[in-house]
Amino acid sequence: MKKLLITFVILNIGCAAEMQSTTAASNEPATTCVENCIGDKYKISANDLQGKVSDGTFENHQALKIDVDNQEVVMAIPLPLGVIAGLPPQAIPELEGAYYMIGMSSEGYSQIEVHIPFEHFLGNYLPIPADRLPNGDPLPAVPGGELPKFALKIQEAGRDIHIYIAPGLVGAYVTTPEFNPYLYLQFPIKNRNETKILGYVALVPEKLGYDGGVYIATKLPDGFARFLDEILP
Image (cartoon, rainbow, N blue to C red; front, side, top):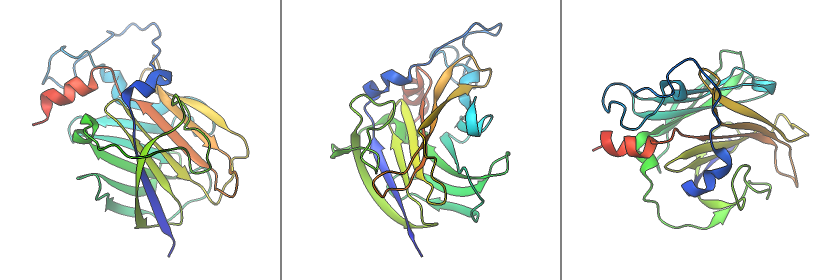
C-alpha cells in the first residue's frame, strides 16, 4: 500500500498579510458574539465561522468551519476528479486530538477533512527548518514563500497532504496524482454572507516530477487567538 505523507508547517502570523479580510457593505451587524461565552469582547462575527469557495471549479464548496461546540477548526479539501474510498477518522499523533477522514462533499466529489482542536492554534512550537511546496514553488499567499515544517508518514491512498497551522492561519496542500490541473488557478473563500474573503483555494499544476494538487489557506477571524486564551484552560 502506498504511504500518505502529512507535513505540518508552522506559520508566523505576520506572514498572513496577504490573507487580510476585505469587508463589503451589509445590512447585518458588523460583529456578533461567538456563542454567549465572551459577549462582544473579541468582535468575532458569526458570519465568519464558515467559508465557501465563491468561484471556479469548487464554487459553493464549504472549505472551512470553525466549530465552537466541538472546539475545533475543520478544513475540507476537495479532490477535483473521481471518487476515492471513504476512510473513518484517523488520528494525527503530532497534534493531540487532531484527525483526518475521507468522505463525500455535498457536490458529489471526494474530500479530505482535517479536524484540528482549538488548542493547537495557540502556537508555542519549536523552531524547525523552513521549506516550500513539494515541487519547490513558494507557498502561495505567504511572504517569502517558505515556512518551517515537520513531517509524519501514515498509511493511505497514495497521496500527500501538507498541513499548515498557526495562531491565525490554517491551510493544506493535497496532491492529486490522478489529475493534473495544468494551470495555476486561484479562487476566493468567502464568509457565510459573502462580505469577506477568508482565504483561497488553488489548483497547482504538476512540476519537476511532482504531482499537482489542491492548495487551501484561510485566515482565521481577527481576535480568534484572544478568544482561545479566554475559553481554553
